[in-house]
Amino acid sequence: MAMSPFASDDDDGLMNEINMTPLVDVMLVLLIVFMVTIPVIRHAVKIDLPHASSVKEDTKPTQINVSIEADGTVLWDGNVVSDDQLTAKIAAAAQQQPQPELHLNADRKVQYEKVAQVMSAAQSGGLTKLGFVTDPAHH
Image (cartoon, rainbow, N blue to C red; front, side, top):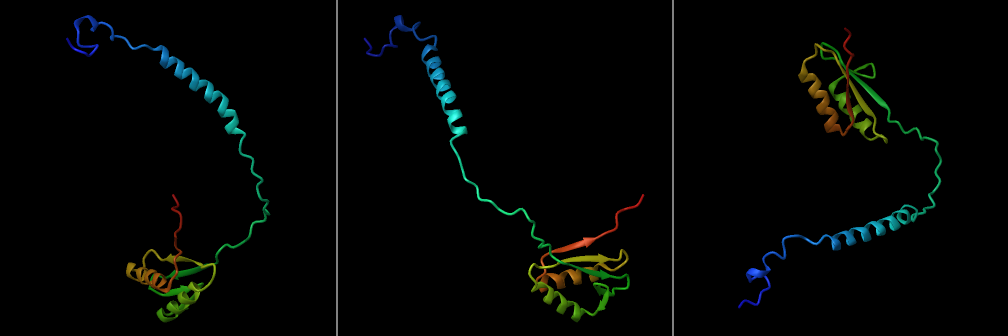
């Protein structure tokens, strides 16, 4: 004689369906709780926001145009510079606040090595913003 209620053959047919009534009761209670709390949550937070002026401050960084001609000549804002002058100008520009943007115009026929040297000089000099200027394709 077993002590468990499921051990005898007479009790095998008792647990073949789940009683859904407690589950429905729980779901209805949760539905009512959510219906009551959602409007309260939506309107509960009232914050007095600070006021700020909407005048935009013009802190746009300056632009430096560095051009590399087909023969490898480097121009700083239109003026021919040597490698030493380029390094000095990059170091001076890196000290400015906000730091200027370096726009690199390279002739399509210039050797890549020269472009890489200018980029390396800009990076070692401390300039972090470097952009390449290209002409859009005309079809």
